[in-house]
Length: 68
Image (cartoon, rainbow, N blue to C red; front, side, top):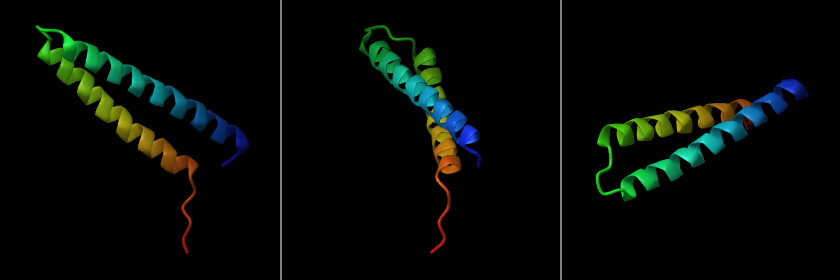
């Protein structure tokens, strides 16, 4: 992996983490509402899980496998 590719992956990782944090805040705010839209809440949670999986994938790309 070149330095440029790693830089791009790290930038992508930061964007994904920021979106994950933003969704977390949105979910908390939506749950605090008395008449929360359950469908929207479910969509937010599903997107958050997708982001978590994507974050893990990108982290694996950045961190090389070390076979001992």
